[in-house]
Image 1 (cartoon, one colour):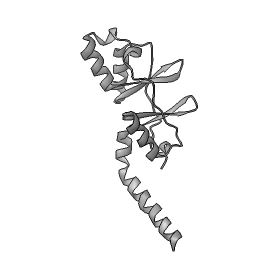
Image 2 (cartoon, helix red, strand yellow; image 1 turned 180 degrees about the vertical axis):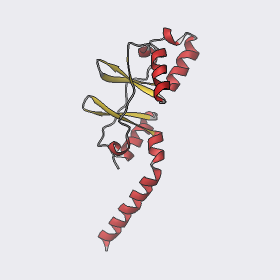
Image 3 (spheres, rainbow, N blue to C red; image 1 turned 90 degrees about the horizontal axis):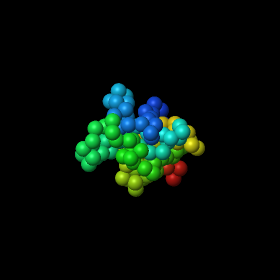
Image 4 (cartoon, rainbow, N blue to C red; image 1 turned 180 degrees about the horizontal axis):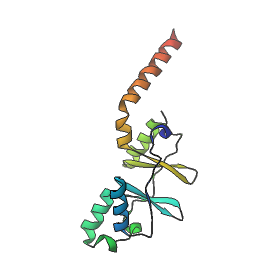
Length: 140
């Protein structure tokens, strides 16, 4: 199974020059746990709920006073739409991330999260059984 089969194509973005308050409003409005941070329309970082909590706890400043570029996670770890889910999970594990922006060239085309993968666990099991059955048929 490929990333493009599970990824969300609706990605919430915000400009690196904006305030944390604006990004949090976008996250709440879209009911998502992260936004992709862009500069000149190119994805450069990700801002997660954890980043927001850490920034407010550490600085003690109002959200309007905290620039996104200072607290967003970077460098941005990405994957491609044609990557297998197995490889995407490996990338998540190796980089200790729960969300992977999906890029084609330099274009942001989607995002895949651990939640997306868990929600399709049954599909993976069915695909594994199908592949095992095909392998068994070849051996006969």
